[in-house]
Image (cartoon, rainbow over all chains, first blue to last red; front, side, top):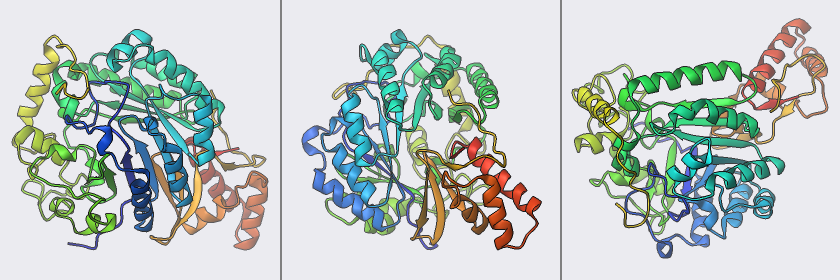
Length: 363
Length: 95
C-alpha cells in the first residue's frame, strides 16, 4: 500500500431527521433515531480531528441538518478550525433570522434542494405540502443574506420533462451554481428504482439540454451534471476512490468511505465514539478493504483506467451482484453490464409504481 | 442574474463571495476553495490571485509583476487575463 493521503472533505450527516420524504434519499433504509445522534461535544471533537488530519471542506448534511439546534455552534467550530463550511439543506425550516445566525457563525456556502420546478410536482416528490413555495422564499433569503447558492436538482423520470424550467428557476433565483444530478441507485432510490429510472432517450435529451444550457450560461451559472450510470459505458470514479479523498460521519458517529457504504453489509464500520478519526482513516479494516488497486479483480486490475475510476462504486457492485469486491457493473467491461442495462430498460419501459416514501419504518 | 464578467485592464478583480484563498499546510501548497471545488495554485497563479484585493486594477497588477519578474508587459498581461477570465468563468473571481 502506498502512503495514505489525508482526506480533502468530510460529509457530516448530523441527523436522519427530515421533514421531507424524498423517495431517492441517500440515507440508509434503516434511519437512525434522534436519541442515538452524536452530541455537540462529540461532533466538535470529530471536527477538530478532521481539521488536524488535513480535511479542508466540511459539508453539513443529514437528513435535514437545520433540525439540529447546535448547527450554528458546529459551523462556528468548523470555521474556527479553518474549514470551508457548506450547508446542504432542504431549506423548509429556515427563515431570515436563522440564516443570519448561520452567516454570523461563518457559513461559506449553501446547497438548497428543489424536487421540481413547480409546487405540485415538488410537494408530491418531496412528500411535504407547501415545501416548494417555502424553498423559493428561502432561496431569496439566502441570496439576500449575501451567501453564494447552489441549487441541488435531482432528476429522474418524474421531473425530467421540467429540466428546462428547473434551469430557468436556478437562473431566476440568482444561484451561482446548480448540480443537476440523475438519481444514483442506492438505499431508498434503489428501492424506488422503477419509479425513478428514465429511458435512455430521456437521458440523452437531458444531456443535450444541459450541454446547451452550459454554453448559453457560461460565465453566469456553473452547471455540474451527474449521469445515471446504469446507461454509462465506464463507471463513475465514485468518491474519487474508496478512502482516497472523502469521508462521511453518520449521525451516530460511524465513519464511512461514502454516504451509502452502510448498504455494504459485509463491512463493519468504526465509530468516532470509540476510535480517533485519523486512526480509522488510516488503519480501519473497512477503509483499507477497497483502498487503492490491490483489491481489484480483473478486468479492473490490468485496466489502464484503474486509477481513473478506481473500479467504480463498491456499493453498486454489492447492490447488484452481492459482492462489493466485484467490478462495478456500470462498466461496459463487467461481465454483468448487460444485466444492469436490462434492469434499467425494464424499469423505464413499465408504468412507474407508487413511491415508497422515505420515513422511519417504511422500508 | 449576474452578467458574465469580462476581464479587461481596467477591471478591479477580487475573489467572489464563497471563494477563499488559503495555505494548505498539510500539503504545503496554496489553494482557492470554492463550493465543491478546490483550485491548487502554482507560484505564478498565487502571485496573481493574492493581488486581487478589490483595490488593484488588472493593469496595476500586471505592471507590478512585470517589474518584479523583469518580463515583457504584454506576456504578463496575457497570462493574468487568461487566469482571471478562467476563474471568472468558473464563478471564483469577480470584478
